Length: 348
Image 1 (cartoon, rainbow, N blue to C red):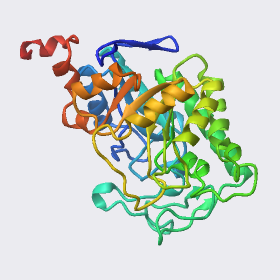
Image 2 (image 1 turned 90 degrees about the vertical axis):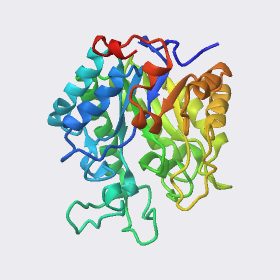
Image 3 (image 1 turned 120 degrees about the vertical axis):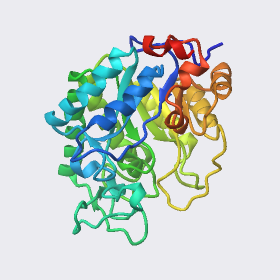
């Protein structure tokens, strides 16, 4: 039986344990550039013994940012600002992944601690958003522009360029962000996609953009671990559900994705979600079983006992922990027999 302390090898890369720091936006970049906050933030979790640190949503283009404080990797300057973070994590015996993201219609937002509402494209720090159609996320938000063929080709190209930069500065994992109501979720959910072209209508058409981007990223990422985060359900009857997710994940496995990071929701506003401990674990379990692919479980997992039970019951293969690692960067040092940094041994 597996536990959170056990190593796992994916696509030839060994992770020293099965704890992943879930990607959590810090909204602390300037013009997309990483700074000392990011090095300390991610570096402390490496010192704390986390097996894989998944960097926050990192935009592949300026218009793909959630907010003006998001990280980006749309130029070589952005990549070089991130390289010290990658190098520090590696120096402390952890692996680091990058979540490549495009927010679509859920972009151009104010920072969360300043209210988090959409900023008009006509105001400072705002821009025109893009999506599958012209339906905004919230009533009263500015309508996004539907992506045309040129826009879709640009999205694919932006992801390839970002993947090459991530590869060249040494990331261990790429995760494509296809969840939480961001661009790819906007395409695959019928709630936000009423297109009538090759990217709308049928299930195969609605998943097309995510599949095309994944194939394109795979072509330059090759033999390294490739993850995709999805929202397993919209939590609304008649919209995207776990059966759709299983079908999607079968396709993603066939084209070379190694692990599905299973989250849910956030494409339909004002939906009541039963957010209790382990509430998303059944989705990870169903996808693991039915699509025969590795999965990561995420969502209100806060204790070693929870994590080990999920792994022991074969409900998932890795544990993505979020807020608990904000509260306690040294969770893994305290909850396992992992080696402590020499500088901290006196505190054991």
